[in-house]
Length: 111
Image (cartoon, rainbow, N blue to C red; front, top):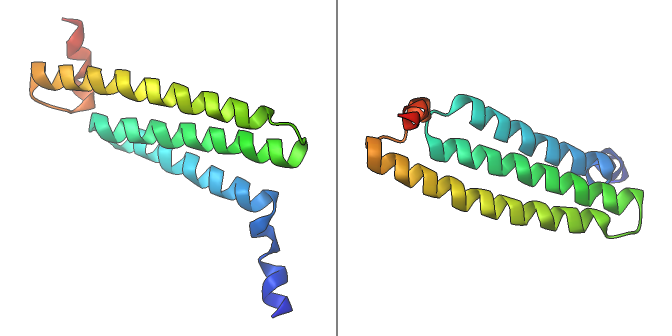
């Protein structure tokens, strides 16, 4: 049992948390790059913002005993909520105009 516990120690430390945050960021980046649907791109951006907020909380816990990282993460959550509201309004307006949610047609909004 001690061999299994010592093999999984890195999961509960700094490296495990950073691996989770990095995987969230990579999943978000892949979603932004590969999706043509505007909602899928928006979800990818949200995953990337959550990964950044998680990194702030992780480094705040392991680097200092202050709550600076939690405050920045809370600020990131507020920015993500505002970004989601504005992006959804733009997407709904685009859908009403073009009857499509394809992000590659977004340059047509200039006309």
